[in-house]
Length: 225
Image (cartoon, rainbow, N blue to C red; front, top):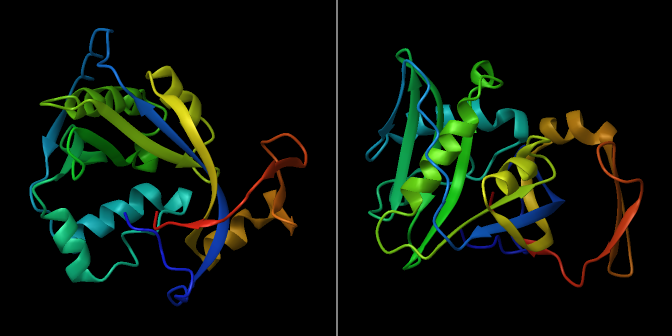
């Protein structure tokens, strides 16, 4: 997705915040055997999803992690993305219930970006995420794909980075990016995060990270998540 111009204000109810973002890639097809699909589950492609239904699932899966990018898009813009031939949306169904979804973007020739991936809260902790990630990565390698990539950030599930690394991805870049988050989400997470800026250096403290780790940030970038 295109970076958010810094001159534009955040949508009502949202605020731009600096976020530690990690980019990962995979340049070779998985060499391990596919994970067996859990009993009673299946993955189906969601062709040209209705924007209202899609946003409902998006919010239900990503609400805990502050996902906002698709929720603050104009309907026409979101429809164009979801209905594009280069976008693939898949839903995981278990015993007839939607358990989660994954989305691929093939707009760059030879590449597949795993733009979104997650489970509904009620289905976390059952091993379904490991299966769905394995399934969608193998799907991403269909055709002439030479590179699969994704990004994760400090607000995602605490195990997200380790899960991606175990799946075969490797880190190729880390950035501090300005991203829009709902004000109520930031209010809930604020007790664990304190930020202080000075002279191009970001010093941040997170309860799950090393105390006051400092990193150089030559420039902040703006990204719709």
